[in-house]
Amino acid sequence: MNKAERSANRAQPAFAEILVRGMRMRCPRCSRGRLYDRWNVFKKACEYCGYGFEEREGNCWFFLYSTTAALTGIFIILILLWKPGNLFLGRLVLGVASICIIVFTLPVRKGVALALEFLSEQKGGTILLYDDEKDLHS
Image (tube, rainbow, N blue to C red; front, top):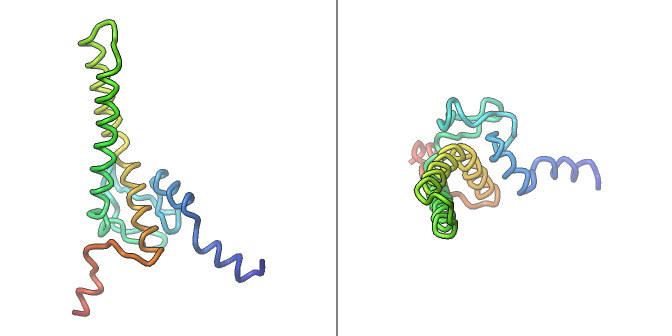
């Protein structure tokens, strides 16, 4: 592999690497910038590479709703299958645990959704619903 091929491979990170960046709540393009100003509030863009986070936030909602539904389904199945000694206390604990897991994993799931959005753009398809540049030239 020559030097040009190595630099081309370095420029396009692997699928798994981009997903890990999303899970770590880092910029999917450069991995240096943080995604959030505060808990679950996207920054406008990456301070290192300029990749826009805030403008892509709307494209993350489907993934967030899907993963929330999946987590909820898992907990409903656990409630139906698990028979604790004290039924009320067991279901209360499981209900509180499910809400905590859904809420506290939200920034990570949103980071993964942004990483998937980036992968989609990288493969040539754009899911971006609102593009400032196209609107400026129209």
